[in-house]
Image 1 (cartoon, rainbow, N blue to C red):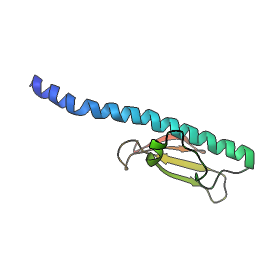
Image 2 (cartoon, rainbow, N blue to C red; image 1 turned 90 degrees about the vertical axis):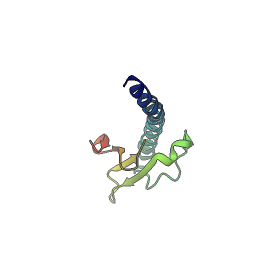
Image 3 (cartoon, rainbow, N blue to C red; image 1 turned 45 degrees about the vertical axis):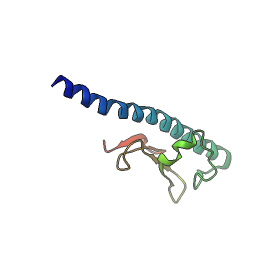
Image 4 (tube, helix red, strand yellow; image 1 turned 180 degrees about the vertical axis):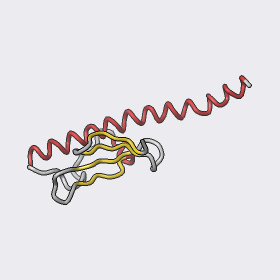
Length: 103
């Protein structure tokens, strides 16, 4: 039984360490994107329509950014990103702040 527990731990823990590292890196990039979006609004008076002009600090994390959207009237924006599976996402909304789905 002990051997089974050790083998299970060896199978699970390395992947969790990878996800933990990725979470920190993607979260840092998301923080930078949110800062960029707010600074853009301060300079121009509106949120950017896309992130096409955003320069990633950690380009490897770009593939984990799922979606950026601005309300049609330009009043709010949202950013969605993932760490592991595509069906679990983290988010930032100018209306609601930071979030996680499913939560």
